Length: 531
Image 1 (tube, rainbow, N blue to C red):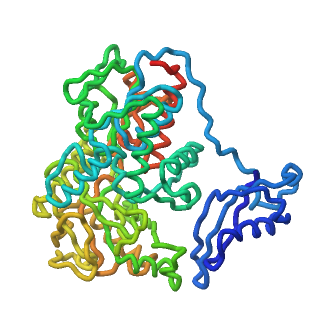
Image 2: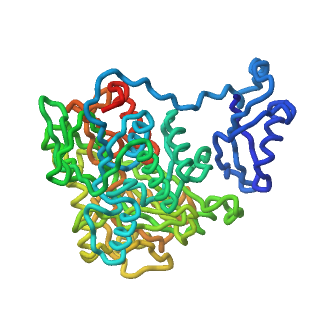
Image 3: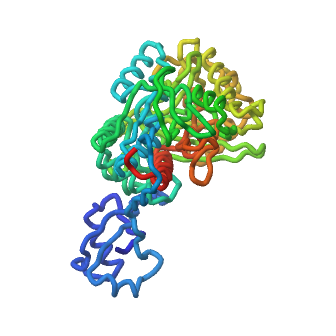
């Protein structure tokens, strides 16, 4: 097949015209096109007079071999092979089936790949299945009664289950295609395979997660919920087994450690058992909310509200003269700011959208990078304590019932506490308390955020809207630790394979799933199925 880029459709043109434009670009007849499939779709909104969808398309032609010799330019090239190739299993006997700790994207896709290859993996999840989990989360939002084992952070699907279900990634890896195709088979929208900013939405993602679990079960795997790994059994620097819920012993020879970025008690246990852990840079800040209509107008001008465009997104970055950087992250068009605590006495925020993205507000994390030098200690888990410090202050500022402190952008920039909400109604899933967010963030973070908001307002008109709402605090943008692993993805404890976002090797649904697959491949390369 050939890969052809730069196929443009205006908002007035429909996808069937792609075939005609392909033929024109390639200087062939439409009848010479056997088939084509969209590889990537993006939006070009740079010109105010028209917005275009821009497509990269893989096309199969009659007599393609002859055509290859006269490729017309940079927009046409040979399409690379997209199919995932399974690794050849190793020869070493596996006495016990592989065990996967965690059912976020890394754990699920490690499990799916191993199940497809005949290894019958066992997946252990500290939280509940996704339906039970959804009920527990709704109860917390309504009552303030937090279940520390089943919440926005813990349970089937991982933290991403209560998000926008964004699948955007900067990595280029054939495994990405495997992940998105498997998600489509599990019920995700088909356009995630080619959209430049693919998303599933938290509502559809829950179904996708369940269907992937069912596929693992159909292939001979097992998934256990409410099964928290509380200890490791290690002999001669090798993993021999796991202790679940403080009592049950499970023998294990190959363990994928796919715990999420909020598994703080697990990090402490692993450190106590001798795993080499280092502190890692991450980011903290707030959630910022604007009317979605404002963002649509700023991005799409006169075309805002066009049914083909949907709600607009943004991605912004700022580098301060101080050396700090601020950026927007996990932007949720038409979304909700959610209470995402996993420990008692701490307030944590995150963003979530359903597939339709039809809420009144847009929200995004507004973050500043922090590094181990900011943590006040050289202990490997110092980043965890740094997070807890600011989450605890937000909890106190919000009234100690998981209400969140909020501040209007105009007040924040003017250096005064907020006393009331303005025209932008917060969507936070608990109550909010007008406050002074400088009391629950480091000074260098608030200083950088003020600079960034003014800078972003020059890039995106209206970003510094005085009534826009800042909700504190966001601390879980990525893991505060890295569990070191070697070139074969093993930790210093043989047979223990850290994977995904929690151990510090991914950021987001796709990269976490890909890393889980990578680790599963190393297990398969070493062992033959049949444990």
